[in-house]
Structure formats: structure tokens, C-alpha cells
Length: 220
Image 1 (tube, rainbow, N blue to C red):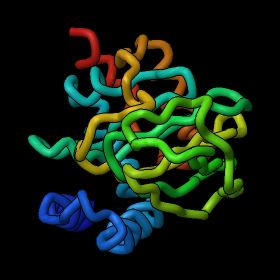
Image 2 (tube, helix red, strand yellow):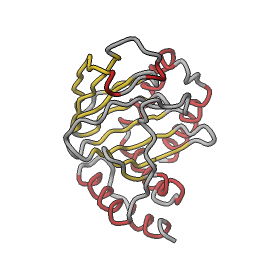
Image 3 (spheres, rainbow, N blue to C red):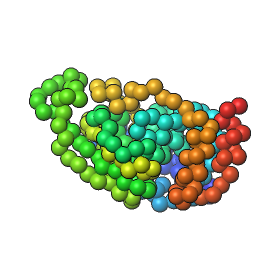
């Protein structure tokens, strides 16, 4: 257990040395790391156990319109994160960009990733949702991985309760379509308990005393 964690802490810290402004040059390195983490459910379980004892990570985790996020690990000051996302509903998000690049793998369930491009020439910071047209639909099922540059515009259509694991890079630009602009919310205690139970029932994480640890620190 400790060997896996020591390897993870070192390997994840190496991400801060990468040039995240040039994601096309580094995404394969990020995906190799994500593949190793994805294959090690014991490591994911260890990280969730430690997250359940970390009040800062609990407060940073929470729901938005499309999914619930659990931040398993975060590097400071870069803000590079390892996350679990649990999607809420089966409908198409609004097209959006991100202030960052990321790599993600589906653990359970599936979703469709939709890529967009402007339907007329415009400066990138002047694009509106009404100026976009879909150009690519890709179904991403359990075990499949992809990476998305901060330059991309996309949306997802997720099967409810789809679970993904992702490495999220540092902010490298402002978002012009407000993909990350929602006000973050923290979980209610009952909601996080429900999510942890779901992860255990799906065998995404091992049975541990997450809830006992969480209740001790979450709302002191």
C-alpha cells in the first residue's frame, strides 16, 4: 500500500514539470500515468480514504449541473488534480471550453463527447454558443480514455451514474464560453455518503471505513 502511494505522490508531482500550454506534446505522458492509476483500484481506494480525512479536499469537492466531483488529490500551488466524476443525467450539456487541459478514462458507464467548431470565422475570444456547430461525436465506454486540450470546445451526453477518473491540468487561460465559471458548491454530508456507497457498490473502490473518517472531519 505504502509503495503504491509513494510511487503515486512522486509520479503525480512530476506533472508540475510539464508544459501544459503545449498539451499536444505532453498528453501521452499524462495518459500513461492515468492508465496506471486506473488499473490500481487499491490505490484509488487509498486516495479516497485519505480524501475523506482531508477537510480542504472535501470542501473543494461537490456537485454542478452535469456531474458530482470528488477531488482525490491536488497539487499546490499549481492546482493539478486527480478527480472522480459521477454524471447526473442523460442530456446534452451546453458547448463550452475549459481553462485547462485534461485526460480522462471511463471507469463505469458511458457517455458521448461532442466536439464543436465555429460556423464562421471569428476571433477565438469572441465565439458564442450560437456560432458553433458539432463536428464529431465519440462514444466513450468503460475502459476508454481520451485527452482534451484547453483549445477545444465540447459537450457531453452522459448515461446517468457514469463514473470517470481524470487528471486535470493547471489553468492556462481564461474560458470564453464559461465552461468552468459556475460557483463551486460543497457536498451535503448525506450526498457524499451516498456517492461513496455507490462507488463501493460498483466495486470502483474497495470496502474501507471512508464514511467513519469523513464524518469525523467533514463538518467540524
